[in-house]
Image (tube, rainbow, N blue to C red; front, side, top):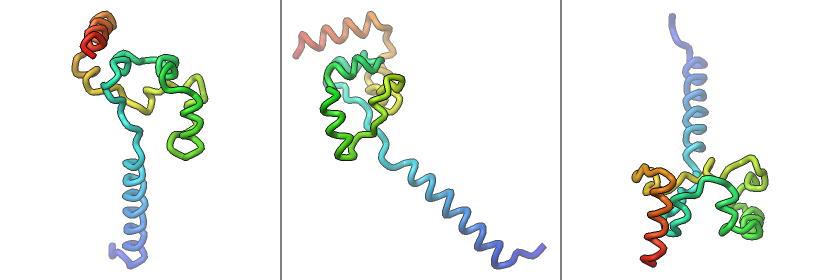
Length: 109
């Protein structure tokens, strides 16, 4: 079976669309949480995030198109987009050990 020019054009379009979708999926990823405040090592729930990251600041960032409005939905956890710091994963500690580490870090600062 001989390929016609329209078949090659179709294949090129498919490759461009798939490549474009892949490229778009790599853009604007949410930043991982930094380990700087020790609370980031233990934060698992949305309410823990909103203690420091005030809704007023998030609303302001939303107006500037720097943060999506998903944070308003109580069912959406912050860790869905913002991954925990590498230190929290690398340590692989249980909650008690993490709390002890946080206490040590607070005393050190």
